[in-house]
Length: 578
Image (cartoon, rainbow, N blue to C red):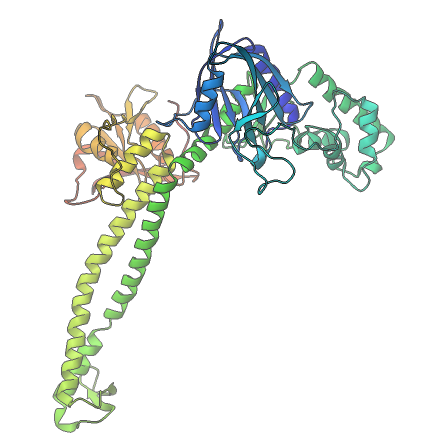
């Protein structure tokens, strides 16, 4: 669900209690829509993540600060100039709207005291992060909005800051329960949940449905409420108001049976019955950290890897088209025996034929002397027609040999490109993307981007896990690392695992002189199933074999190994614990 104004109210209180009085020590911009403020206080250091992403706009403390680009964006440099060393003096919310202000006491370049505010607007695709000076003038923003994008409100440097256009809704904290109740009942023709959504500022559809479910079970028309249901509505609105006033909410996440996050709220959600599992968290920031971590990683990688994804996607499409044409041509060449028969029958019956005929009917001694009609070129003699068919036959035979080799080569290339696409989808940061970029450059898909004087980046180590019985499990991040891990790092008695006929990481269980247990194999297989394409599958086959059984085909692309002796285990992909 999108983060609503009421949930933001609790986040605002959490940030205010933990961070007011903190000093901005560092400031990063991991992606075009994200900021991370490193805040230091006497109680320690906290990382405040602010996102204006259309898919997951929010603000909260984080333990998963994303990797930063090598060159900070211009907006990041501007914020560092004005906010580094600044003290956070206040956190304000615009009523129960999804607009939050972070107020800072700063010192300018000549040592004078000044004030800046960072406005965080959490509004789906209209989300933004805006720096405002003490004169209420916009200094700059993550997203600039000019007249071509909006005629109502422009967000541009030197423009006066104005709040987003308001909605005709009521603030629960400012209005009486009776007023809110009467306004909801007056929403003729709407269900109770829709009526509440139209009246309550900052309330999400989830909260409105929950209130309606507690009152009447089924979502009835607002004007159809009985007197008892009207009293219940008054009671539920009163509870909601007190929950906000006293900050008595609790961070709750709903998960499906697979443990995947589905929704979140500040109250217990009962409308789904037993369909979803409810999990309570220690803080609102902790909840949002878990809810958005994987989604953000995918979005961030998509932004940073856009050029690589395009290159690999185009190469996959081009290779697939070429393979399809080659397979069609190969199928056509498979009918070449008919050409040889035509040639031989014409050659054996030349004495019966004359130049100028468009066809001839001959007895086919390859098929019980049945009559067969053979097309002829009237401009050629019988012998020349025979030689023409012989030539077409030899050409088709040669084409089959060449096409078979080309198709095999194309299929291997397509498999390789799919492994690169899989590695891109799973990349966790800029360093992993740089390694994939280097791999593509090494095999000739893109040009090297290294500049004179640029240092060679240190290669990342494999991902490392430990089984419940103490075996080290190593996971390759990309094809280059897969090769190194399987063919150089691993010992011959270590165990190698890989998803069967599905692009994914090479996984190694380090034997370390011990017999590898079935439990370790199963846990490593689960890790292999997770670190591969289409990890949402229910059951995945994973092959495993001792490393000594692996072979690298000569001239093959990175990440390609072959094996013939193996076992297979079926497992369900689950995100492993680090």
